[in-house]
Length: 119
Image (cartoon, rainbow, N blue to C red):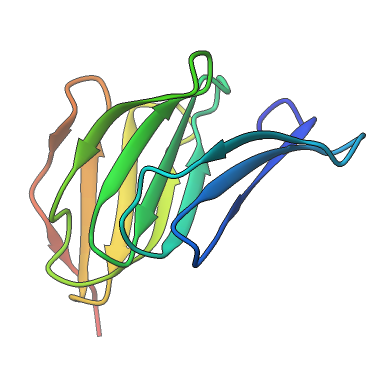
């Protein structure tokens, strides 16, 4: 987490959690995925977190409310393996088992053109 007070974890039980590093307390338990959650990335301002699962669903969560703010079904043709929000908070990149890197514009919640991974 950008504030260095929290850490996020993903789980094969279809959930992700937000933890307080100092106390070890679970601050938030989210269960909005239908498959194993494998990727997590925080927005630089700490207000959003992106999670992705093995069912190819990408979700944006608003940490101020604890609710899902947006989701993208079929973000990849196969499992999503990683997600990363850009340092300026404008883009979210994902990579999946389908050999694609997807870049999403977070301002418009829209996908840019997919890019093939270089071999």
